[in-house]
Length: 102
Image (cartoon, rainbow, N blue to C red):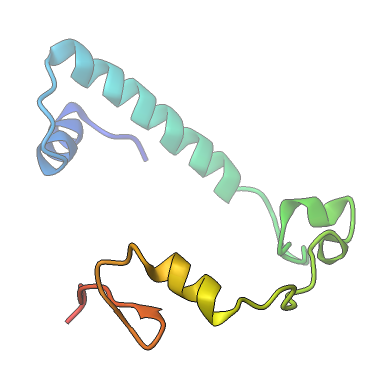
């Protein structure tokens, strides 16, 4: 799949970008190059290949590199109050933040 100049103009409009002719031509070349690379990746036969949780899993056990999630120090009430002193809003030792999702 390759893009046309009309496709690039539409993408630029959707992204609210103003591109002159030279910039549109460069964007067309770069986008088509990216799509070519994606097509090459999609053509690779991955049947029977086990997905990796992390790219380094090929070389070593990654889980051995991660630390255990354990409590290492407990804070006192005085430390908590000192840390919460600059909080604009707090309740019961927690930061209060404005609701952003309805």
